[in-house]
Length: 266
Image 1 (cartoon, helix red, strand yellow):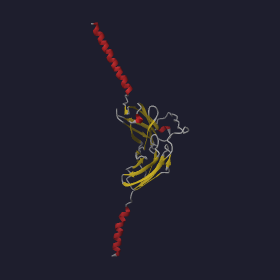
Image 2 (cartoon, one colour):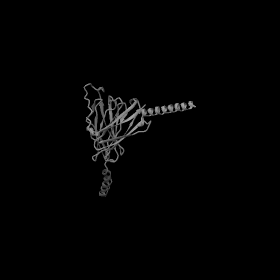
Image 3 (tube, helix red, strand yellow):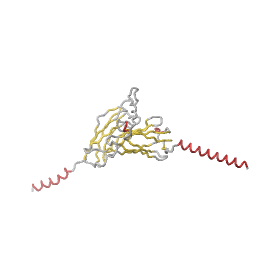
Image 4 (cartoon, helix red, strand yellow):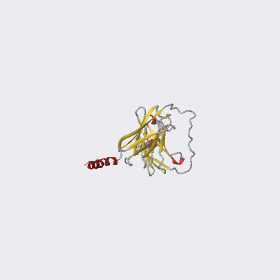
């Protein structure tokens, strides 16, 4: 009788230990930074679907979600992300980074503290623009826009799918407006959506969107989009529309005068 009970217990307990619970970890070497610094976070996840990404949520000291990218992970479950400062810089206080996945209710989180001044010192090293090399860019870049819309869809491809692509948007007078980061797919294709409008987009004119991958000038490409009152202007821009309108009015005026001149002769 004792042997039968023991066998039943073994049979019942075996399936329970056969299935491992999902596990997620998150860490960073940086716990205290300056407002203009970047933070590298590294994590690991196991026993979840490899086709679903890890969601990395970055929460500011005031509770605002400032970043929420989707991160792929490798065969060992490892994922990583370089978190750039928000514009114009990180706020002073405690930031919380949370890693989550659709297949598990478990999450992992870390925190880092931002202290110090956000003013760039006069002796702060400024990177010079790389010398232009007459070579075809390793990145292709294009935009999809709709007249009067408040968003810009940026798409493209790169020859390297192992490094994240950083997007910067500068205003017509050269001010930095926005920063975004995406991870290209295995075939090198990438896309991101940029929202316009608000006080950062109040200047009318052509805004420059630049995609940069790594330090090589071969992995850099830019496009320009015209913005008016915070909204997208079609490629046939407002200046051209005004010139066309003036031309049409002039033609009508000249035609009217010619008709009056002919009538007056008779």
